[in-house]
Image 1 (tube, rainbow, N blue to C red):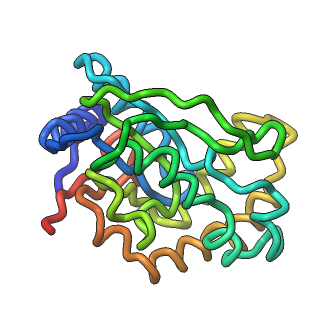
Image 2: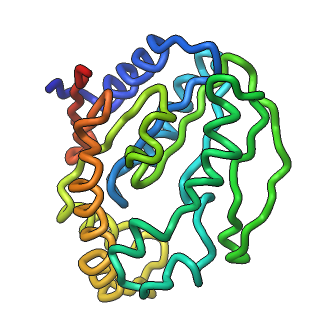
Length: 228
């Protein structure tokens, strides 16, 4: 494993992205537990690639959720519900991953869910350039149903206990004195951490990743290229 500065990590990921050659837009998964730093990492990588004149499509699994009633049908704190019921994987493949993949027409949609209204919605389709890069962040991206639809697989690894602390800090920064630390604690202990443990047992995401990023120290991260 290598460790270095944040900019060195992003530079290595940009190099890895450039090294993968496809006849269609490059589909990059940035997977990892909640509060592991996936979204920030994807945004940082997007900025570097755009500075290199690459066309970048940014998307997130949060825009491919099922409506709340469906994703919480087993209960608000169900780990099984989080893993099995939360995300519309069929729609993700149909409107985004497959159109950008081999034989696709490159006409894609960023999202199928509107979190403000908690409803499904159809977004107008766009056409990706052949050389575009899709940077897609989210949880459970390397599960068996999705793993073969990515051209580069990045897994962001953080100790699960550390994600609880980060979630508390993040919510406090966003909501100030109204942050409900007890609710965060319950959600993480009952739903999010056990769902990740289900995922690790089912999919072994770190073993399926091309690159594992060790994001426990945000200023001095580590990374490891995994041979396959």
